[in-house]
Length: 164
Image (tube, rainbow, N blue to C red; front, side, top):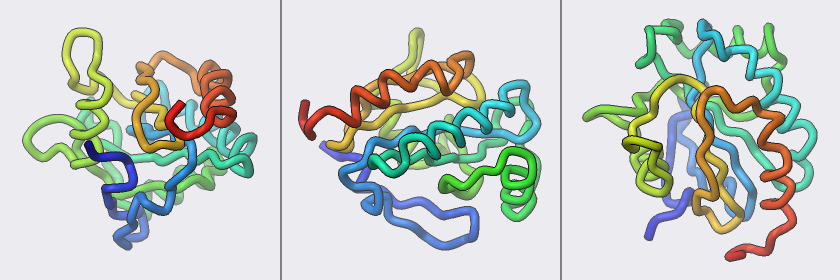
């Protein structure tokens, strides 16, 4: 059965990156958008990253333009927006599809690990997946879940031994 470390993704700078770089870490994966009502969650995601990063936690942002065309920019525009407006320092990746026939393999896997309430499809921007140190999905959170609401789950995952 695959784990997060079996995948690669293109970083916002255009470089292919192996997600094995995050082996043994707790990771929060989020589909993002710059022009969404949930966009202010970037600040909360950055706070989680700065709070728990040194304990082996990462946030991975995957811009997506599939919901209301709320991520129309190119990679450089997305990066500039995130840094200038929210001080984002966590890894951001190139724009992807999270649903449909062109779904990025990481999201195909995430949805297979943790389906949604009525279907596995991502419903909107800022859907979040918490991945444990063992590379498997622990939980899925909807767009309405603020990043700070996930802090206790992150702390529990950080304290757990791999496989727990």
